[in-house]
Image 1 (cartoon, rainbow, N blue to C red):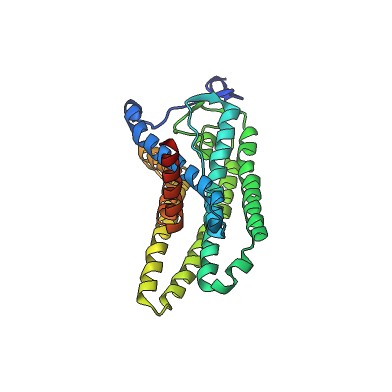
Image 2: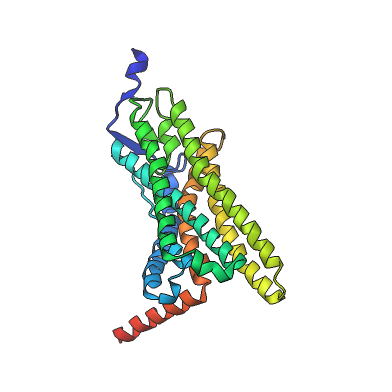
Length: 300
């Protein structure tokens, strides 16, 4: 009876404590997080506005960029079902970004290794099917996570030691057998993130091999400069993703370090994407400048 009294049956609410051990500093920590959030939102909103307006940007690379905007949800006390909804959308949007990054790597591979057939291979209908496949894959696989959590009824606690509703952070609160949940989480992670990362690495290996075969040194340097920035985004996204993924299951990381890096993993990639893929692109820079000058002129 004592064990039953210390557990929670079908809890209706949960509490997010933020960053364990750093609660007294969370007010100040929120400012840099807010700044990164602002950069991510403004950058992706600008891309979403500019790309449909500029016909020359209606190409695979830029259409994929328009799908990269992701949202960050955060709360402290919330309904259990709302927490599961947050879990689904956070992990689904992460997996969607992974799928879009894979599609962009494929686009760059075809553009460099088979440029004459680039537009004939990646037609609008093909792009549409790729986005639909990524969305269906994400919805089906990530959708399993909250469904399996709903089958758990008894929990040790309703306090989640995290800044958002992360899958394993909730599962580890259960006072029941969680082997199915853990196995499903591993399966979803490797099926989506693992699969995408492997094929992105293969694509960029082939891309760099093609770049090395270019005869002009200036062209090689320009290609390397552009691709290096892309590789940095990929590595940052997947290294932090797998760090968060494995540390919940196998690691003994200081909780505050784990939560901080997990939160950075949510915020930094969407903030970097507009900079790496947008600011460094001449067409996008020119179009943004035209829009800003036009708005400034109309105000005068």
